[in-house]
Amino acid sequence: MLQVNHRGTGKTVLVAGGAGFVGSHLCDALLGRGDAVICVDSYITGSRDNVRPLVNHPGFRLIEQDICEFLKIDEPVDQIYNLACAASPPQYQADPVHTMMTCVAGTGNLLALADRQGASFLQASTSEVYGDPAEHPQREDYRGNVSCTGPRACYDEGKRAAEALCFDMLRVDRVDARVARIFNTYGPRMQANDGRIVSNLIVQALSGKPLTIYGSGTQTRSFCYVSDLVGGLIALMDVRPNPGMPVNLGNPGEFTINELAEMVRSMMPVQTAVAYRPLPKDDPQRRRPDISRAMELLNWQPTVPLAEGLRYTIDWFAANLDDRPRRRTGAPRHRRRMAASHTAFLEN
Ligand code: NAD
Ligand code: UDP
Image (tube, rainbow, N blue to C red):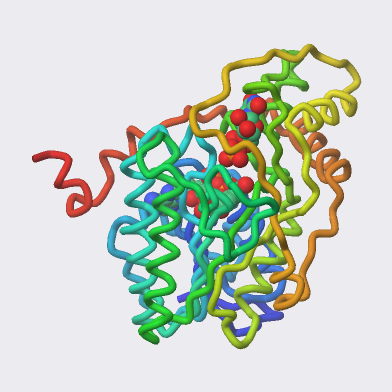
């Protein structure tokens, strides 16, 4: 049984994907306010290093498990956050079937647990449900422009299916489910080699390598610092009544990739060159959240400007880059571990 720490709220919260970049910051924040936390993670893209400082905390328990497998949790759980899913394009495309199964079977398993336990549920969805958006900025009622056959589909369509599962469980009154549509988030504990833009640029700049820009660099993204996002996730989980609709969480500041690269370059003591590379297939051209809904329902908006968040992130990478083992992208270990019931069709 978990012990709740001395300032305990009495709540027990399960964080699936809690050893990942965002998940580990969420675990910190929940423990910090006195919740007991059960972190479930397979380490497919996350790392024990991210939660190492928490393992001796009396309110923290770590379970190594793939959420595609049946989850048996005996103690009562009040809230379940589902952040378990590879999030960087190279990583979620490395084993696309597993990504899709994580989104569908994994989210289904966690929703079933929430149903059995009477727990509230928050799904970490994504701005990728808007695909390469024809509307700008993206409001939650925009239905998106997603390829269901391209290389990003395992993630985009997987997350869309997971949203549908959440709203079905809500409609049939079985789970108090909430859905956050998260836009690009960055900060300390991103993996050095996960292939995402912020980590790539910083690691390249710190290693004196050329900054890689895919395509012309005129595509845009909106970058949210991780502490802002975690505040939004907790606010969405705790708000009463359940909004009953998805909520965008992101920073509405919009930057081209060229502008971001220039910012990172200008923050380094030595300025490296830029190397242009081909644009990956189906790469969205622009992305910016309309956060009116989050402001109205949650009284939430980001507070950390990009330059400040980048400074914290650069400092963290500078201090940690050499110590942390570089993980290979890909999932062969976990492909073996996937629940037989979810992969049987591949073996026929
Ligand atoms: P991350 O890869 O650092 O974290 C994901 C965590 O989930 C990892 O610890 C990984 O090991 C674990 N995981 C993956 N599949 C699993 C499975 N089948 N079973 C158990 N554990 C599994 O990614 P992140 O950036 O921290 O993203 C967290 C969540 O937020 C993801 O669901 C992602 O889709 C969503 N999201 C993130 C961003 C972003 O910019 N960071 C943007 C949109 C959505
Ligand atoms: N990108 C880039 N150089 C890199 C990594 C990514 O130019 O080294 C581009 C990528 O093509 C995309 C943007 O940066 O247009 C954001 O990529 P990321 O993988 O971080 O997130 P996503 O595409 O999922 O928004």
